[in-house]
Structure formats: C-alpha cells, structure tokens
Image (cartoon, rainbow, N blue to C red; front, side, top):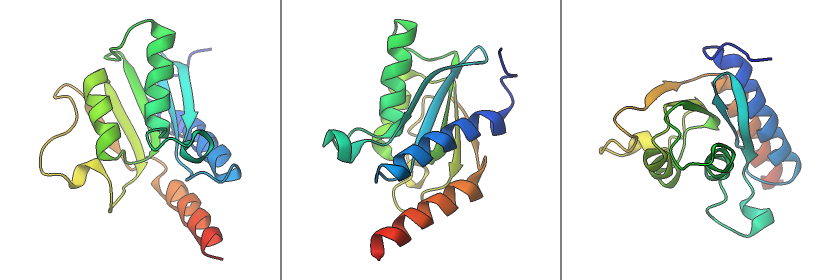
Length: 149
C-alpha cells in the first residue's frame, strides 16, 4: 500500500526505526529511508563501525541501495528521509544523485552541510528540515550519554 508522498512524519518514523537499530548496534544513531512513488525502496543506518568504513553513513548506504533498486544512478523522483542533517560528504553524494527531495530531522551544528557557505545540494533538490527533530536529538543525546559513562 502506497502512503501519500507528503506524509513526512510517516516516513521519518521509518528512518527513526533505522536509527534505533544503529543505536542498538553501537553505531551513531542515524537512519535513512528512500521513498519513490509512495514506496520505501531503500533503508539504511550508520554502519561505520561494523564495516570499518568511514563512508558507511546511513545516507550513503541508502543512496547505493536505492540506485541498485532502480537500476540507475539518478534519484530525481525520490525523497531521502534522514534523521540527522547530512554531513558535507553525504550532501555531495546527494548532489550527484540529483535527489528530488531531502527531508531531515535534527540539525547538526558541528558537521551539517548547511553550515557551509556554498550550496551543496543539487539546485533542483527540495529541502525540508525539522521533521521529528526532537525525537532524533533525544536518541543522539542518549547514545552519547551512554558512551561517556
């Protein structure tokens, strides 16, 4: 069953579930889903520790999975939902994928792409921020609080 493409909370909750999986596995809790025509075609969470790969961010894994599903590298008709504002590396990958829409939850004041003065997303990419931001922030805070103990 397809869900309306403008139901950002529904899809962000799916991304939050991915972030919770990351949390349980000791990864920084960031989750992502890619939606195309009202269907989730890819989902991922941070796996930098598991894969021993600094590029294994949720967004990067979701982009790769979506491109494989669609059989092409461009994601113009897709929306990426991610629980945390993408970093510069992920924003660059989103640029090259020509993602149609980026929806993120919490802002990242230290490493988020929006802190850079140059626009990093493709000019045609639509941007929505702050969807379930509080929930994402609380999960991140819980993760880092547990690591400090």
